[in-house]
Image 1 (cartoon, one colour):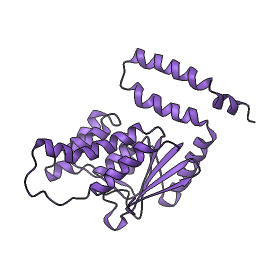
Image 2 (cartoon, one colour):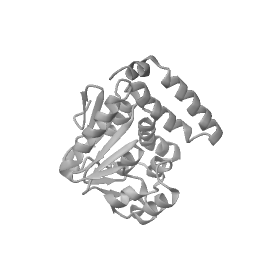
Image 3 (cartoon, rainbow, N blue to C red):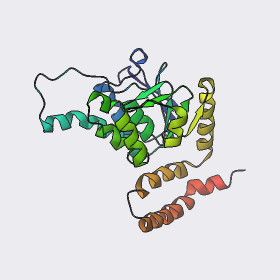
Image 4 (tube, helix red, strand yellow):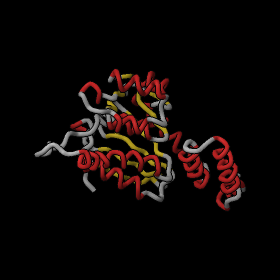
Amino acid sequence: MTSDILTARRGEILEITLNRPERGNAASDEMIVQLGDIFETEREARLIILRGAGDDFCAGRAPGAPPKDPPDAHQLRKMHDIVFRCYAAVRRTQAPVLAVVQGRALGFGCALAAVADMTIASDAAKFQIPEFAHNIMPTMVMSSMIDRLSLKALMYLVYTSKTIGVERAMTLGLVNDVAAAGDVEGLVDALCASLLKASRVAVLGVKEYAQSAQAIDVDKAVNYARSIHALVNTSAELRANFKKP
């Protein structure tokens, strides 16, 4: 594991830190692959916390060495599949993912903040989808947000490349809660404490339902809710929790 990504466990919590503070935690392709690996293989955590070291969350995808020859469509798709895979891994990992955002969350960083299940930010956080301003097709980052933001909000952010503050990000659905920089960890600790009190099977069941129900029609989503509700509520783990004072 490269030192550009740090992982640490606190009981049932896995903390992942993007560790290139001197570059605003801009993610190299190697980092993106490793991040996808971590999310794809994690099976033990009840909660995964994703953050950046230093002043920024993630200033985007770091440019790599340009290819000697212009890639064809198949090669280009393969080059960018690591990003799509990373977004999918965050969605599909069984534990909920909490992004903790300070400073800049640009491009790939903005996408990570959006695709996480929950996002807490400092009042100095800034969000931007800058691709259009650089003549880059923005559908990669859009794919991370298509089920997170309203279509109207997403198109506005893409077309304008506008940098927005945390209050605006909250109104658009990018951020769930905000605090002054010195108080962010208090919000994180409170959320961690709440999830650790709950049954693990219930915590994971909520994400399983949330990530699947939106992809099916309403009647099927309701029936799926009935099934998972019965399954979780009759599990030995949840019944054991009911007995606790």
